[in-house]
Length: 254
Image (cartoon, rainbow, N blue to C red; front, side, top):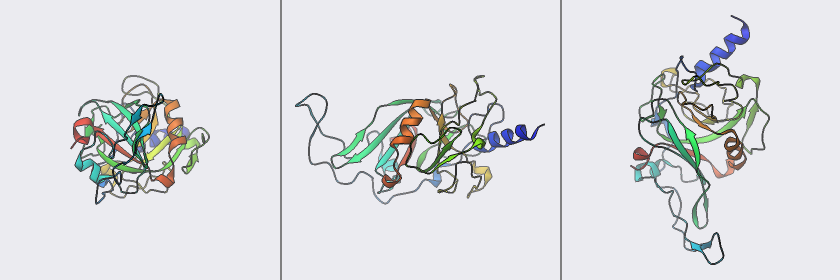
């Protein structure tokens, strides 16, 4: 086996993202940063005009669709919340919406189609279970095979994001890591997404990323269409302390 092939195999094994027949996936949601009170700040006290003139809408004081348990996990300083909601516990199709906090409450961006792990979601994730971890995780670092598209996040452009082979449905994986955002699950924040440090041990998985959709389920990551990954990278602002809230709809509603 050539040195290049060995490196590709090691990357596919350690990233936890869509590697088809050699599954290694994320880690458990109990590493989510907890908060002492729900996010969102004080309720909005003013109306804002949206759409046609005279149409007034009051923005929600809390991120919609999240129950008290999930809200309590969101750090109080988070002002950007990417909510990835799975259709059901065992499904691999999701929807992603970026919420931004304003003086009036939480404003929702457009809903984007997303995918998650082959077997759905879990709140007790182990490497190889082919489920995405439920929880709330900070987003601190990005990178990819392609040049920085204009993100304010630290961005590692590296050939280490090269990937080949096929996914669970025979789809090519090439280009999946053109853009990635590391989900701070069992990893050291402040490092490249390629960093292999696993604070809770390798058996709890790692390498859980947001990355480019390859038109099939992942091993544990969340995938979005390429144009939507570019948009997300440009939107996320480290000074607004972005987090991802991820899980099936029923679990996030608890």
